Image 1: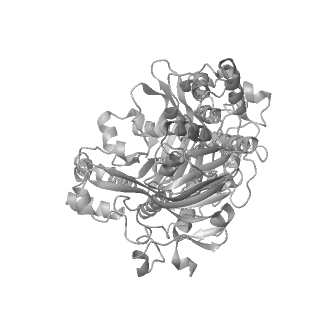
Image 2: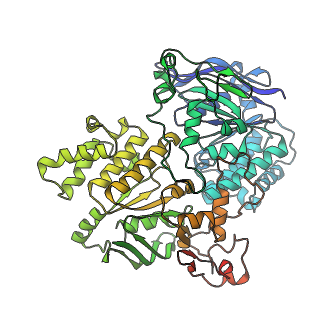
Image 3: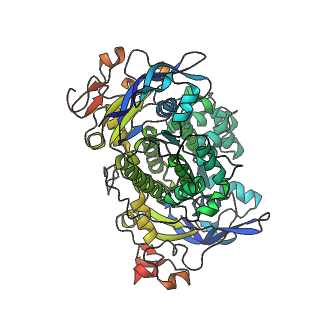
Amino acid sequence: MSNLLEIKNLSVVISDDKRVLVNDVSFELKAGEAVGVVGESGSGKTLSALSILGLLARGLRIDSGEINFQGKDLLKLSTEEMREIRGNQIAMIYQDPMTALNPVMKIGDQLMEVLDSHEHEIADRKAHILNGLAAVGIADPDRAFDSYPHEFSGGMRQRVMIAMSLLLSPQLLIADEPTTALDVTIQRQILALVARERKRRQMSMLWITHDLGVVANLVDRVIVMYAGRVVEVGTVEEMFKAPKHPYTAGLLASLPAVGNNREKLASIPGVPPKPWQVINNCAFAPRCSSAKDICFSHRPELKNNQTGSVACFFPLGGAS
Amino acid sequence: MTLTIRDVTKKYSIKSRKTVVNALNGVSLTVEKGKTLGIVGESGCGKSTLARLIVGLEQPTEGSLNWSGAPLGQGVRNGLRSHHTKTQLVFQDPYSSLNPRQTIGACIAEVIKTHKLRAEDQVNARVIELLSVVGIAEDMQNRFPHQLSGGQRQRVAIARALAAEPDLLVLDEPVSALDVSVRADVMNLLVDLKNQFNLTYIFISHDLSMVRHISDDIAVMYLGRVVEYGSWSEVLSSPKHPYTKALIQSIPEHTTVRGIDFENVLEGEVPDPANLPKGCAFNQRCPIAVPACAEKVPELLELTSHHLVACPEVLK
C-alpha cells in the first residue's frame, strides 16, 4: 500500500511566545488504513489533526514540517486549493455535533452547502443528500432534511455529521473523539456505522481518542502521543499485547482488569508535563519507573523496530 | 445503619412545554453501611436525579429515603443541615463544582465552619489534615482551582466532601472527566478512603469497568427504573436482563483487539422520559420482547436471593 498521508517533523507553536505544543511529529497513513491516535489532554493529538486540515485556531501556527497528502504538501497550498481538499478529499467529524453543526440552519441546507461549495458531478443533489442520510441510519431522511439540529438526539446529530462528512466520498476521514459524548449503546451504533462505511468505501481513517477500548476494536495501527510527541507506533495487536513504551504499558495497566480481579489499580504517578517544558529529556522520565540518567539528559528519538517504532532508551521487551 | 430507598418517583413539570418528565418511576434500593452500590445506566435513566435525592438537594415526588431509620432530607431547615453532614456529593467536573475565586483551603474550611465541626482555632489544622488524607501537600492550600491539575481538583472536591464528616458519599461520575492515567489514582484513593473511614458509597457511572472495580452491589437503571440488581459479580458475569446484556456487550474492551461484534448492535434510542412507552420501557428495543411486554410494567423480582430482574421473560 502506498502512503496516502505523510506527516514529517510537524511542530505547532503558540504564535506569541513560540511555546511548543506539537513537537517534531512524524507519521504516515496508508491508503485504506485506519490509524488511532491515542493520548491524554494536551498531548497534541487534536492539534496534529487540525494541522492536516489547516484549521488551527488563531494564535497557533505551524512552525515547521511537511504534511504530504497524495504527494502534495498541504502546507504549501493556497487558501483556495486547501478549501477544495477540505470536505472533498479529507473530511472531519468532531466530538460535539451540536457545536459543529449550525444551530439556526436546517440540516438539509447545511448538507446542501457542502455540495454547493465544491466541484462535483452529482446531478440530483437533494436525492444524493437523502441517500446519504438514509445510509447513516436516519429513519426519515425527508423529515431530517427539513429539521434543525436541536430536534435530534446526540446520537442522531452525530449521524448527521457523519453523513455530511461522507457526502463527497473523501479518501480520508479524520474523527476527533466523535463518540466520547455519547452513551455506550449509542457509541456502539456509531462505531458499527463508521466501521461499515469505511469498509464499503475503502476509506482511510485517522481516529483520535483517549479511549483504548475503542482503539483496540476499530483501527489497524496505533500512534501514542505524550506531551506533544509521538512515543510509540505499532499495529493494534502488538500495541495491546506487548507495548514497548513504558507510558503505553502504564496506560494499559491502569485500566481495571476484566473478570473478577479487583486488585489495586496500577497508577502512573504524577501528571504529564506541558510540551514546552520538555527540553532535552524524555517527557515521561519523571513518571517512569525504569528511567535512568540518560532519560533525563537526552531526548529519545523514535526508532523503528520489526512491528513499529518507539521513542525510548529502554523499551520494554528488549532493545529495539 | 442502612440507606433505604422505597418506591421513589420524581417528576419534573415543564410548564412552557406543558409536559411532565418522569425522571424516576418507582425505585427501591437498600445499601448497608460500609458497602458500595454501583449505579449504571445511560443518559436519562435517572441516576443523577437519584443522587440529588439521596443528598437532599431535591425532594422525591413520592416515596421515601431513610438513613438508619430516619427520613433523609424532609426539607426542614435544621433537619436539612444535619442531613447535609451525613451525606455528601462529589460531582463529575471539579472545575465547575469548585469556586474558581476561592483558594482550596478556604473552600474546605467553609464546610467545617458552616457545620461548626471544629473550634475556630482548629479549622486550619483540620484543613491540612483533610488535604493530606487525599494526597494534597499542605503548601497547596493557598492555591486556586485553576492552578491544579484535573486529578488534584477532584481530590480537593473529595476532601471538601469529607470535611462534613459524612457517613454516605454519593459519587456521580467522579472519574469520567479525568485523563486515563490519573483515573486509576483517584479510584485507588476512593477505595482507601472507604476502608479508612468506613464510608458507604453510591458510585454512579456509565463506565462499567469502574463500577465493576469498586462496587459490592450493582443496580442497572433504564428510564427511571431499576431493571436489574444484585452482587457485582452476579450482575456482570451472568447478566439476565436484555438491557444489561446489551450494555455489557456494547463496551469496547481493550482486552479484545478487533473482538467487538459490529453486527449485533442494540438498535434504537432511550425513549423520551416525558412520553413513557406503555409496559416495559425497554420493549421497543428488546430482542426478546413478546406482545405482553407492551402491556404491563414488569416488577423487579427475585431470581435468586441476591439477584433481582425486572423481566418476566427471563424469569420464566
